[in-house]
Image 1 (tube, rainbow, N blue to C red):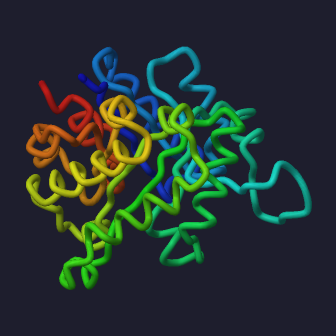
Image 2 (tube, rainbow, N blue to C red):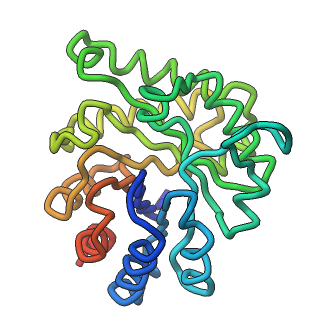
Length: 252
């Protein structure tokens, strides 16, 4: 089954509103035709609405970097799925390693966010991946399995069809280090096998699994040539229109 690639730019805590708008304008000029790939940008919360206005009617989608699982209430500093939909988001990143490392995200809280994203009409991008120490100890596949099973707890096959997965080895995020295509493919194939065992082969065949971890224009093609890698969750290289556009156009 052929899966449509999905490229997402995670801007993290970068760019003021004017800078975000300039980046989007540059992307729109550089990516006039993205018919063969889905493209998303994930600005900081402060830039979601102005970026959404620029993206309206274009082929580039909008993602948020996080959300809270309650519908409304006294949760200072949080945003919910309805708020994200209201400003134009279609996707949301969940369980990113930086949320796990710095802000106490767990498999269980990621699962709660995932469920509220689905019920709120958003497409969740669930991130999983191991640290360098865990890789050195040979725990990669077991850890990924645990994160996947707990992150998808209570999810049925029809809901699973709407989820994008992202494998992000923590040791490759922001370090300049990248998993080799073979290392990444091993884990992606393992993830797809786990999805198949849980939800059936048809769901697994259609599930898109992104790779994240120092993806750059000069390594994206070798990654995308792997049979189970269906896109990229891009950090630093997505902050420049030229480099992110080259990643999106990896086939060119």
